[in-house]
Length: 305
Image (tube, rainbow, N blue to C red; front, side, top):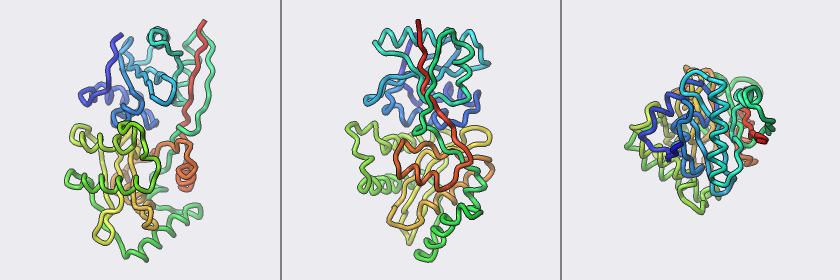
C-alpha cells in the first residue's frame, strides 16, 4: 500500500469515485476533502479498486473513512480492504475504526465482515438536509420568522445587491471572513491550516481547478457584507461549504441563504447545509430552518480477533 496526501492533481479520481456512489454526505466531494485535508491530516490509497482515506487529526484519534468502490461494489474486495486497512493501522500503532460513515453504508460492514461491529451514531457530525423549495419560498408558519428577518432587513437597509462570486471579489471574501473571525473564537486555531479560514482560502486559491464551485456575495449600502460557496453534491443535491456574513446586519444570513438557493440551485431537490459540530448556536440556526432530514453518520468499531 502506498499512501499520499490529497493534492489538487488528484481531483479526477476523487470526483469519479464520489459520483459513482451518489452520496448526500458533505464529505463526499473533492472540494470538501481537499479544503479540510490539513485539519484531518488525510492520506489516501487505492486498495482493491477502492478509494481508501485515513485521517490522523492532531486533536482526535486516527480513523479511516469507509472504503469507496471505484466501480461496482464487490463484497470480497470490501472485506479484504478492511483487513488491509487494519494492517496499515497496526503498522502505525493505531487501533482501526471507521469515522463519518454514512448510515446507508452500515450494511457493508454488517453483512460483509466476519467480525462483530459496534456502530455509534454521532449527531454532531450528521448533516442537515433541506428541501430546496422550502429554502427559496420560506413558506408556512414554521418559517415565518425567516420571512420576518428578511422583511426587517429590507425595511432597515432598503435592499441589497446580489453578485456572483468571481476572482475579482476574492479579497472581499477574505475581508468578510477576517471581520467574522474578529467576533468569533472559532478562528483561534493553534495551527492556521486547521482553521475554516484556511480551508476557505483553498477553495478560492484553486477556484478554476475545481469545476462546479459556485459562490455569491451580498452588497448592502455599497459594501459587501456576506458571501457563500457551494456546489452540486450529486444529481439532485447541492451542498453549502461556506457561509459568512456581518452578524450586526439583521437578516443578512437569511437573505444570502434564500438568494443563493434560488439563484444557484433552484433546479435541485435538496440542499445539504452540513453539520453543527455540536456547537449550540449552529444547531439552533440549522434547526430553525426545519430540515427535511439528516444524513446520519456513525463511528464503526470492528472487533477483530
